[in-house]
Length: 120
Length: 110
Image (cartoon, rainbow over all chains, first blue to last red; front, side, top):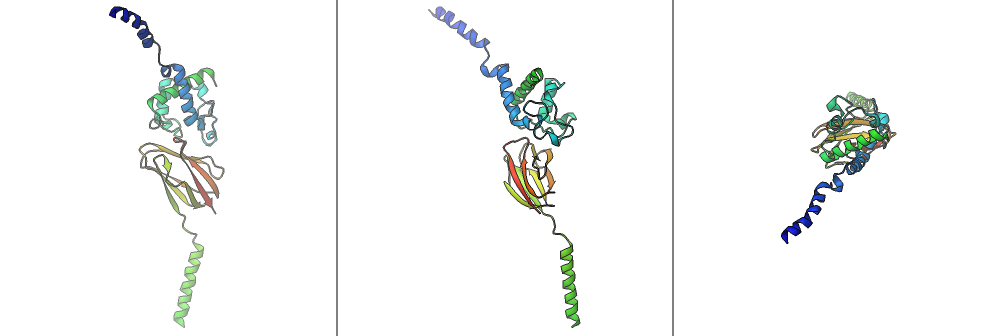
């Protein structure tokens, strides 16, 4: 009787272990990242990440066009966390490490990866 | 008689100095604390300065895209200050790039 119950229960447990929770999927990270991007980054980088936000005209050099960014995820995370000055780039890119959580920074990087792929 | 003349001369000289020397430009301190500007609306004059001080534990920024005067004073840490000299009359909407909810206005008169 107990053995039969275990057999019946096992497939359910296995399914739960394999299937990621909705919030842990790559798609969810991109969606969350897009929200953070549109809250914090859009001012300079623009809604499409092309470096043409409403504040962009004030800066030389202009904010980066993230749809063609050559940098990898690790470097992007460094810039986001420490700001432009921390990697010898524009000091007008603020440090976001105190404002965004680690998860939010990873989510923004996931969104930027998607931007780079789609170019929009 | 002589004493009166000297007094009048001294008074005239003092008046001339008062007219010749422009009024000393004022400095207006504004703290950034608990993700707010300590002064929501600041009234100031052209030539005055505004000193922003970060009293939070994390970085802040000060910028404006207003037509009256646009600027970005950059990002700065707790305890640090940034100074803005007001160059034009009008209204300046000031924001913090790191905390989009932070806003204040500076009404600058001539």
